[in-house]
Image (cartoon, rainbow, N blue to C red; front, side, top):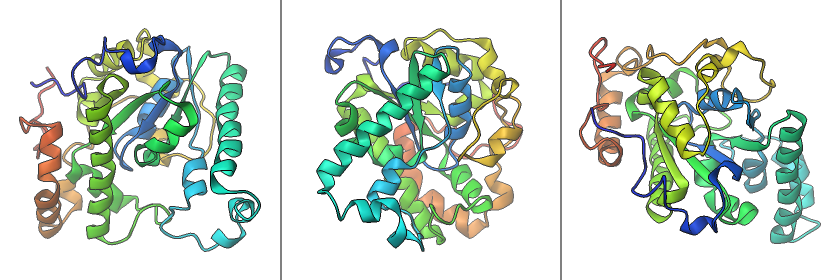
Length: 292
């Protein structure tokens, strides 16, 4: 079985762009296409005794106004705030408060480190650079496009996700390519976590991730909902999950039509091959997955 954990060479040792910072002191940014496993990872990390990872706070999406549908956009706080200050000055002011909020929330939880989970973080990486410079780490969560888009079909999130399949495929490609591009530029600060490995080999996948983050793996992380988490905006299904499981792998066969699956496969196969060059997770059959 190929090792798909790491985004590029030198991730565990290359620290040149981090200014000598210790990994265990750096904030963690989690991103990836919707329905790819970011909510699951959020609760897994929040279970760790040193890491606080709260529910989604849509600061960046609100600031940039990138919702698919937003009928009350004209009355939002930021619509008025933009009339008062130039965009760069406003971002500096509100962005500082956003970071301070994370730091205070982590302190209140008794934890020295924080993580921000939002699927769209992956397309706002330049904004994170403006907020934190180079002193942060990215975990890019990826999932086979067939299962990702099948899951979106079941849970469409109409405010955030377009309705047409062609547009959803473009969104998947935009999110995935953004992560691939960041990994190529900053391989020492980007970790690619493959959903299929997380749910079929959770202890190995999480052990490798936590080591890269400079943290110890705690077995309690595998039963992330045995501890309470702050409620708020996140995928509602994750609250019903007792531990990582592989039941959703290959579910696209029950959800997508043949035409939909063919269209998705045709348009995403090239980008997925960059992640999974051996085709291990290309189109898994039910019951055929190796857990070794």
